[in-house]
Structure formats: C-alpha cells, structure tokens
Image 1: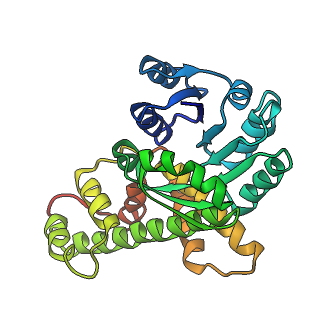
Image 2: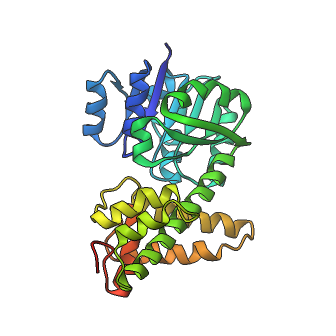
Length: 296
C-alpha cells in the first residue's frame, strides 16, 4: 500500500494514527512531541519530517492546533509542499477558519495537489474507538479518494460542499457543543444551589427532550470532578474565537457565542485552559458558590 503521511499526534491525532496503522496503512508520522512519535514508531510507523512526508506520500493528513501552524507545516521552510508531487492529496483535520482552509486549497491547487478540509467531531473517545464524524469541504474526487481512510478512523464522513465547507460545519458544531455545555452547566449549578442531587437530576432529564450526547458525556464528568481533557478548553476557546472572526467577516451576528467566548476567556484567566471543556461548569459554580457534585 502507498505510504500515508500523518502530522499531529496530540489528543486526537495519536489514536487516529494508531487506527490507520491497525488498518494496514504504511504510515510516516511527525510531531514535535518525540514521545508520541516514538509510541507510533514502536507500533510500526516511520518517523519523518514534513518535507519527507510531502515527497514520499500521495495522501497526507494533518491535525494541528491552529491555522498558522497548519500554514507553517504545509508551506513554511522544510514544509510538506516543498517537494510534494502533483496528484497528491492533503487532508487537514484541524479546526481552523474557512478562509484558512480555502487558502490551503488555492495554494496546493496551484501545485496540482488536492486539498480537503475535514475536521472531526467525537472527541478523544471517538478518536480512540474509530467512531469520529468527518465533515468535509473540497472536490468530490479527492473526498472519494480519502473515503477508505475516513472509514478506518470514523463512522461517518460527509462532503458538505466546496473548500472551506468542512471548516464552516466544524464551527457550527463547536457552537452547538460548547453552548450546550454552558447551558447544562448553568442548569445544574442552579439545581445544586437549590438543594437537588445532580446525579438524580441527570437521571430524571436525560430521557426527555433535554437529553443529548453532550449531556451524557459531560454531566458525569462534572459530578465526578473529572476534568481530564478529551477536548481542552484551550482548543474550544480558539474555535469560538474563530466563530466570532468568521461571523463578523460575513456580518452574521452571533450573540450567544459572544457571551460564550467571554466565559471561556474568564476560564482562561482562571487557569483552566488545559482542562476538559466540561470545566465550563466552574465558571457558573464560582459565581453561585457551589459545586456540581454530591448532594448539596
């Protein structure tokens, strides 16, 4: 099988790369975290720099912290594009702005290289279990070529539209997820302040209209006080900042997301950036002087 490149072995990328290895891919990997690289090499991957990956691999995946890092890895000195072959496909799974995705599509397209923006939803559990949802933007032929890889790493993949459409969809996804966590946090803080047992409240409402995947994933974490990151506040802070920038660029008011960003900003000031975004509850707890745990 042709070599496949994978750049970015963080919370999401490392288990995704492991699943590609388990699926039989001949994988070249790169990350600044040498420990993560060594872990993948021990499982059969080869260590390589971005330029070597670009020269060797007809399919290359990136999943990186932000747009400027993506641009640097692809187009900077020693980057993927330095020696990339015509006909190759780059798939960026990072959460970036639609404009940044379209810039990559245009630059690589000028080199005869395909580009698909395909951010994911499902968090670390989905990355580990291979059940991620891919939301893609780009050309149909490139998406079709990537389908076997998406099938290994996820349970669904949809081409939403042209370049940038996947990133737009991811921003919408992040708005819904984080606003839901904030709403759940406020509601459970109220319940505990009023003297209710949050576990019983959760059990009572999860089967009704208020039930959701977010409720099931995050409320038990809040109650256990388990804020180990599956999706760090730092990443979601960046994503909602991208929401505001993208919305302002097209004159789309986003009132709730603006308030959400200030909540995330307060959590940043409070030193919570490396915690899971279920820790949004801490903003509401601090203001109400309670904790969503046990029976108050």
